[in-house]
Length: 385
View 1: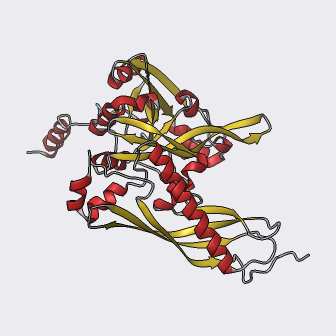
View 2: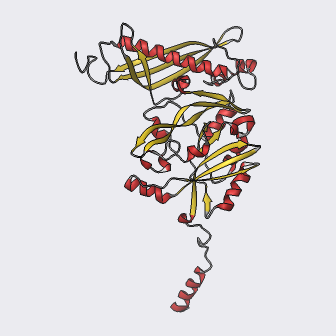
View 3: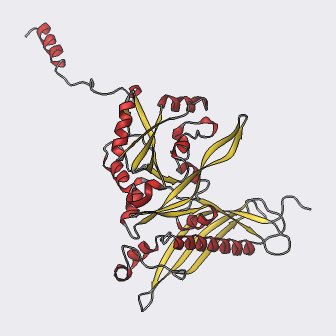
């Protein structure tokens, strides 16, 4: 065989090779960043937040001038029907592989309505388990159109990436789709979902700006939403989770002394179920932390600070627990602690995966402040009178 014939044979065979002709180019797709779900008049209302990755690159280079996200809306008897209606109005193919969060309205979580929605995103081949889940009572469309501070990319918002903000303050523990499913399948078949609302605490030369904030938790069970624990009533929840960093504020005793705020970190939590002879269960909670002082006025001692920190954290843990009891919710998942520790007793007293809880179910709360860091070398005032 001559060289020319061999070359012709090789070139001809390349025509039979499979190529990438059926692959959609990245710039010819729309990318879903978030999905919001509401329910009204026996129909699911679905909001799709679409982002442009060209805006993401531009925001990282220049730090601004990013167009707000666009939100598509449709409704249907099922969430799938609503999504297919949005497909019909889309100019490009929609890609779901970069979806970052899912947010439910209160109505969308009532009467098991959230279950088929969760199931849809678990079964769909393009979506992942690491999708953050939130709940709200604010209008979902307004929440999804809030532009991040300094007009940053939507992918850098706190809802898209909540872990970045928890390094400074873990008021509410973020929950992803995988953790949500585990929480609903394990005792007590309830889980706290971060509650989000709109606040106007920022301002620029054009006036007040809207921003999203974590303001508590919504208690979701397999049967639907049980209710919300918001603002200061939810503070105890941060001490019963893997908190990266938190704060406590208290008034120093004696005379007209001022309030003091202490940074809390290095939290270590242990919950011990104690079973008596009648199979009645009490829980002993041990919380080990470290504290850091920032600004303060007057003379204080480490013993005084330790005492006040322990009292304040114990108070907050009890208050949030009481709010959970009002909703018939096991807000600290004490049923699961007993299930892991003594499954025989759990089987005797559980009902639908949940053990009976009362105000006395938490017997002791021991707060150990291992270390107080003054933030400098002395507990003396920086500015003396």
